[in-house]
Image (cartoon, rainbow, N blue to C red; front, side, top):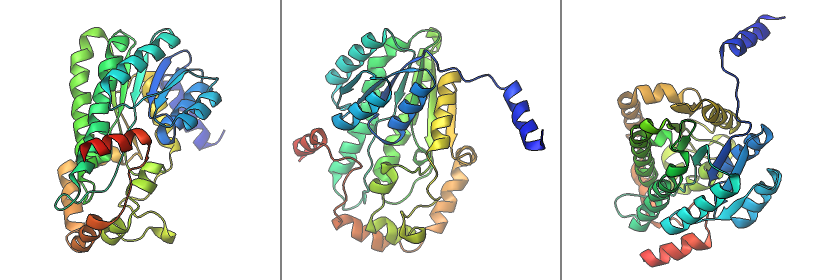
Length: 309
């Protein structure tokens, strides 16, 4: 046995085994990206999953890959619909052990001169949608084995130009999660927060890969998506979420260095402020007129945007 194998064996001996088998887990935003991949992996490891989202065809495909898991179309910005769907899926699972509040959207916004509807819609989905999900699932997970895993973001802690709407929503989600942790403690249920940097998902490639962002941050390597930290693979984040669900962890991060940034938030923000002290103005001008969509452009979202108009 080589040294590397020995280290892995020692880690395995002293770490509790991952046991998601048999857990009944509800996942929002499960049609693509983080939600879809998490559902597939949990199913492969023996969990029973239920899925909800707004992309019915994709949801049906993911559900089929997860042993014909129950799924529902659900606009998480509609509290009555969320409550009805969560209750229905929980009934089909025969109870609920965990909820993963993952659904979210992103779109660039210049705070001065930008379209205020972008902020309104982002808050409606990313904050109110998470709240409605937790409100509906809360009674079902309020037991000693219950758990809520809430997907926030490194953007809750450090803030970039054009990402103000997204950052504000994720900071609010962080606050909701930390509050819910205290309010559920007496039931035995636990709450975890997932902090991710820029992962290889549609959220990154479609949400902020715009001409305005490239103007401010520079072009990605090989003409790819322009980011501050580089795009990280999705796999380690999904593994971290599975560990969190198995252990009912307080926090999971991906990549690993996100934990260090969270620990020194004020310093990290000062570094970003300094590194972006020049060249932001042209990008803001582009953003005010650039046609850039949300990460998913679905009929339900379009109807709500027309109501805001």
